[in-house]
Amino acid sequence: MTAQIIDGLALSRKLRAAFAQDVQALTAQGLQPGLAVILVGNNPASQVYVRNKIKACQEAGIHSVLEQLDATTTQQELLARIAALNADAAIHGILVQLPLPPHIDADAVIEAIAPEKDVDGFHISSAGALMTGLDRGFWPCTPHGCLKMLDDIGYDLRGKHAVVVGRSNIVGKPMAMMLLARSATVTICHSATADLGAMTRQADVLVAAVGKAGLITADMVKPGAIVIDVGMNRNAQGKLCGDVDFEGVRQVAGWITPVPGGVGPMTITMLLANTIAAAKRRLA
Ligand code: GUN
Image 1 (cartoon, rainbow, N blue to C red):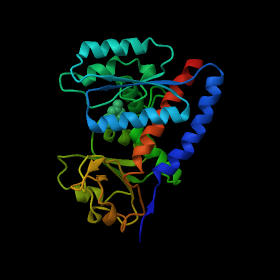
Image 2: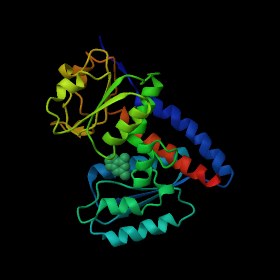
Image 3: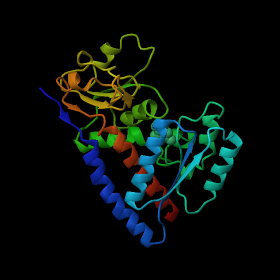
């Protein structure tokens, strides 16, 4: 059996076309959604991600501001920029691209973002709402994009075993909470998990979010499983690849997301969704 591909690019195009209509209607009411993206330093991968986020905003008609700050920017200077954006009525969402240079306390920076502008969903207020099931805050874009892909193929998570590999605040932990909210039985694996393959082989849905090329091999996947690859790595040839050995695993899985063209575009799509939602909440 060869797995069916979950095409994140095609789903993104469909969703973004609908968002562009939403943005047009909001703009006509005098409420053009606005996103500020802050990049500190010159991490090459971050520069690409940020450029793609700004481009997606422009294509959807969302007002966007890119603040590129020098790698030597102090925490105090960054906090002052966030305070200014918190007070800026044209800005509904603020995103500080991670990772930040080591002299800056990322937690303090995230907490400084006004919760109503936390479109990354990293603020403790958003994280707490997801954890407790409260309908407020924002869901982190990458796991939310994964969930949307599962919804798009019409998959019912109730009672299924979902295994998440990775426990980051950006993907692993919020992904587990979203799957739990859909009544999946959820296992979280991480670097100290004793026998990773024994866990992943139980998965009806396997989410790999570690950042290690080729970590998930065909022998670690249950036949027919859905495999969602969140990894963004470069292989020895410099080619973009995920955490999943795509060619091997596609022979076993029922569904699989490619890299590129899977989770990546969906992350940006959900950022647009959160920015539009943030603007709409101004109306409420
Ligand atoms: N770095 C890696 N992923 C993300 C993300 O989703 N948002 C931000 N701000 N930084 C990231």
